[in-house]
Length: 524
Image 1 (cartoon, rainbow, N blue to C red):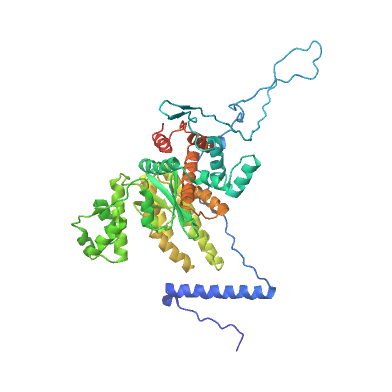
Image 2 (tube, rainbow, N blue to C red; image 1 turned 90 degrees about the horizontal axis):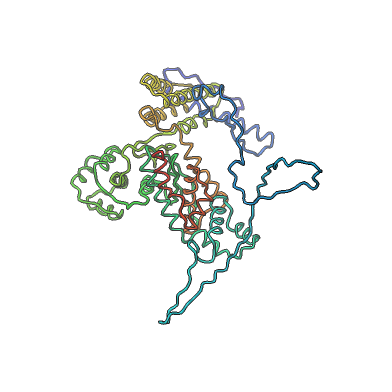
């Protein structure tokens, strides 16, 4: 067999089709891959090389972001200890004061320290027996339940849910501090009798939805009880809300939006509009036209559809999604609310908006096979950055001329034909998302990227990597609840430590998160 490489016949331009171009790219990729493998065998190396990607420049400041930035002067240094509370004050005299010396005041030096030690209180509850033989007993102060003080309970919740200290390490830490507590008692404090926190978490979602013109969404893996699961994030600048479930379907997302409200399966105008948009066949829609169904049970709806001879899984799925949207509309969700995502299909409901950073990342992650392909990728990425920067300027001061020019630039860029067929197919796919990517032209208040949602969910991912999966339903629920409350507190500049102390002590001086969201939305 000859070892000489056979020459590949040239193909006339008029005979070349997209499929042929793709096959030629595949052959070229095979040649390069085989060559790399031969070099690897010769060098006796057994390591995989991860491709190095340059960092994206999508969200760098544009020149128009702050034209006076260069003129800004350096801000004066902040007086760090101006509002620092003083718990103890000591006057220290010099060891020797010379004769005739005049007192000129004090040199102020503040030393910050912390006191961490057990503080155990014995309460002697006086008991009296009445003439009837009944007992009257003194009551513990408000906020005290069981055998643990509110400050200790706050500390445990703070360490576990905010500092991500694992339960075994937290138990060891408490023992080192002199706290007499068992692992079972610690687990109970972390996961049990926290209904007030759970209720507040559910209420903040509904408050956030009512005050929002848009929601940002994302999800991540959340293993539970030895099985794979997912955690969904819903939020914006006013709040963050997390919910772990076994599924990440569109029905699951709609169930998340129902949180805190009764789930209904309701046929109305909004439900039928959704079904028509998702191309439910007319013969199926006609069977639903004169409906008499309304229920809170999904299985009852499925049985009713089967009675109507609607048995196709796809048709049932579209109908269930539609009636859930009908329920959300009845509960008062804004009809024009926008949902921003990274193009995950389960979030494609209501007024769907796509993230530009994720879109650019699709091009960024392509691996060019030669310099010609590399130049094509660089050209397209530069074009995406240019449109993105124009959109940032447009959001600040929208004009009809800018809108028209951006639409033209978008059309020209994503209709580009390059020598890189894989890139060409990607451009065609992105072009189909024009409405979702350019939605900001009609609604300048919408964000251009989903970084906020990714940033919010990153803390959840960190907790998952440290502690692994959850095992009990209470444990999973608590992880979602405190992640939601902590992130929402942070968005409003509320100390999570102070918030926990306020809630565990039952003083409730800090308003509920729902009220905080509503006040912030109203500018109060």
